[in-house]
Length: 213
Image (cartoon, rainbow, N blue to C red):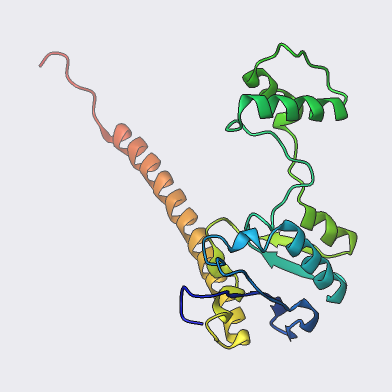
């Protein structure tokens, strides 16, 4: 269909460098007429993606590692942790329920700030649904850093590139950035040491001023 008219195909897939695309992982369905870049998440929601992910896990070899970005329907938490930007009414209800489940004492007269400052909340760890599902089937999910979708070869394949070349390209980007970061850290460290040594040597070479002048 011409751009901007009619429905669109929504596709999810997964693959590896050694085996290519996993046949059981193909998900293709036609979205509504309003499906576009800005609102297709209403159709590819957490439940749709979760069902697809379970099918993928069943098709993988034992001990596989799945690389995934942080799209909202990928990173649904098993237990939502309260955030400071939530409305006071919402956050109080959720925190109170959360504290009750954890058997943590509290007072209903506490403020939003007091609730959020509790050690049990500050130290709580986010647990994602997909992580738990993968672990239960002896797989592991590796989450890409935010705004680094170029590390994921699936982003390139939609432009009809060769899959193996896309995987190698993404891996090369990761390796280059890793090496560059290591070199950057080394350079910064050496500069700091150099400045410190220079400062010390200059102070040692300086002669005290003659108070009689």
